[in-house]
Image 1 (cartoon, rainbow, N blue to C red):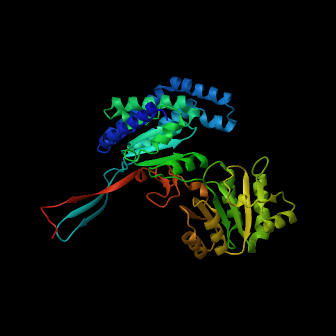
Image 2: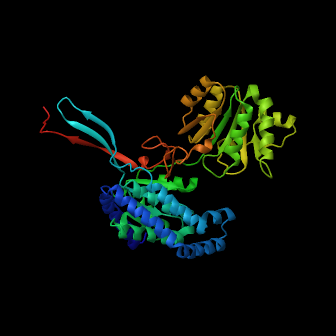
Image 3: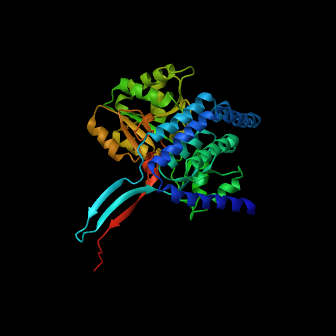
Length: 427
């Protein structure tokens, strides 16, 4: 690796660490003032941001990016104003730093308090959407964390312009400009170096496709908070209201199939499969031009064939697939416990739901399914920081340590113990 590049990345991390110590004790007023300045600066810089984004779009077209990827990359006036509004909404959220989580008075008079504090330095590794630059920087700033941003090469010019606005807003309001920094190169070697700086960076959050997240996880010496993919299940129980199942399935599958909380797998109890599956299949076919491709096991295929409904045979890989498309894998199961076992074996532990009128079955499902979010009679599409009342989210975690599920401001914090004494010594 280029020695100069390694030095640059290390200096960036050292500056972030120094800034994090100042940011950790910054007042809520100071952080909010910087964020409001940033929101105003974003709106005042719309023409310059559009010019920078046009460079990325031109390069993307030359590189043959798909229409979907170009759309994710595109900034327009409405999207830029939406970014600014998102920053103002973060200002309105309560500051998590300094909250007292627990207080204990020991028999010897020691007062022990557990207090929420920032994590420190958070590295965000992400792909093509430039709005992530602002969203993540604002969330980390509000929670008192310094941030190192490493965006995708597709959005390099847009991200560079946005990062400059953040630095200006910080500097003009008295906070360290190095509290938010963008890695100034698209060279993959810079990322490799960054992921080894565990003495300076405290947490890495990758956002993007499974390949990116696995690369970060496998190459990082720093703790990583992540979810690889969203293989989400909807289970129609023997006591399900089929009309409700239809409504939930349409929302969870069709509304936004590219989302990580969209349903990819449908399980139906054998006792109701013959009556419910044809209705669900017809609803999916009618939901959009082209319908939804159903990839079926033998039992569900036989039912749909008898009803004259289109389907295809599922492969073994389909049963663990995140399609991110208008495709659904379908299986018939013999029991509630069989559904639970299937989900625990084949899901990504992200978001799963049961449709049933039987509360006992629902509570059994919620207790036994080993996922970050487990629903009863609700769409998996609710797995989202705003929908959970957390405000904006920095991501969704399927890990078991530190954070699980949607991650809001509180999940960008750790805690420390603060102890007050009057001269006590240990006997």
